[in-house]
Image (cartoon, rainbow, N blue to C red; front, side, top):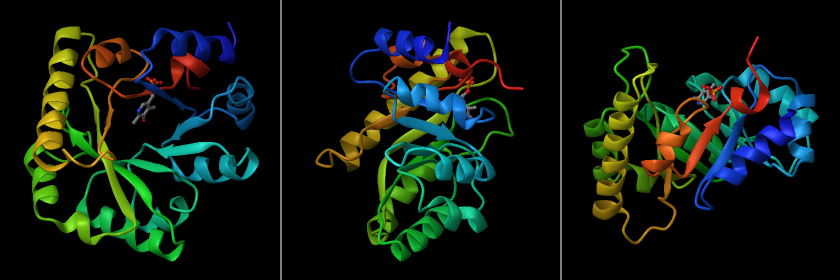
Length: 221
Ligand SMILES: *Cc1c(COP(=O)(O)O)cnc(C)c1O
């Protein structure tokens, strides 16, 4: 099967409430173009040095989501190119994105990355830290970022029950935030959970954005 048919088969299997972020990291622009020709417009990259040349080479109606750990000093390179930064994992980063977005007169959608996995090394806020940022009102003073929801990565394990329980926890937290702070704010709506190996579970637990790489583009070298 080729890229277009793998992508279309996944898309056909999803509820209409779920969008696919096609994660093209480590793959050539030509592979992205194949998915583009099949009608896909939403792509994810996790490294600045890959995003920049791909952005330059590919059609400008692609919507890019940045999904990797982002250092503050690279924000100025990313902000002019992306629709959404899914991997916001510090207040400092959030402030930097706002500052740079203001220079371009843009509003960048952001997701707060929440640490739900057991592994220590994964980035992200705890539930308490994320809620504190929201409750503090600090976000409202940042006029060039718009909080669009939450992102999380489950533990790297083949224990489906564990993965499901991590997604369930995050989905519960998302619903609690929605009810407490964003009941009247339609922009807070995205729950980005699910990758190639666990997206069916994520969808059952309420995902609205699945970030799928290898199941579309093949294994990364
Ligand atoms: C690489 C990556 C993905 C996609 O991983 P696959 O297992 O290839 O689908 C999703 N999310 C993030 C944050 C990634 O870095």
